[in-house]
Image (cartoon, rainbow, N blue to C red; front, top):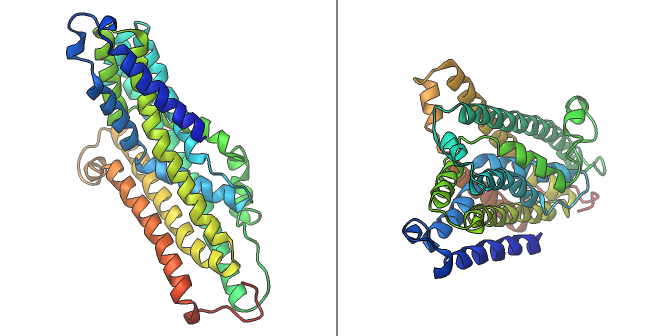
Length: 338
């Protein structure tokens, strides 16, 4: 995983610097293409990694796979790789001469933009709803297990996905996500929604680079840099959630208390973001732009993503603090193993 992220950085920045050599630039192209464009594409990828649908999908899936006994460190990496593949493919078409596609996706009124935005946002919203229901089912199970442990009824299961009505209903849907690499397809489907300003901006930049008659590798350096920035932060997000959950799972009492807080937060975030995305699709198709739908349309999902990451970090730090300094207030029965 780390090697691939490093390779993306080397390829992206290497192709950019080679393309900026004087012998590779056509007259006038230096005015529209430079190091600043590459830095901009890289920062767009890093910013896009904090979109709240990324955070919710990565964190909830990490929680699910760890509950099944796996150590899914690369969930965020595979998700970002799939997501950036869509952007790379479209920029590849631009480099091959299909510049009209860039203008179509940059036009709010275009048919392509409308269809891809509808499909991508709907898939994203439905997937987050599934994750929300899974986490709600797990939350009920964890609260029940915590009560049993406090009452001294012995060991409990660490996974809340092994039984129960909701698990049986959703198992056929979520069975396909059994290892981190399968998040590539999920990221690919999420990437179909070109309503995200960062992706559209990158296409416009790539279209301008293609119009300047730059070498093909110069145009493709932009989506590679975008993927490098996004994969770096999404991978770090997945790694951090593994560290946080691994700390929680190391002791039964710690696991249950921490899971009550984190699972509830995961479910709330997934449900909220899924609702926002699905309502935005309904509003767009119904042509409603006032009242509640206007407020929903004004939500900045990137800022919301930063807030969610902050909440997860604060929850983990609070869990460490409470376990370290406040254990006497809710100590488990002495005969129950810690």
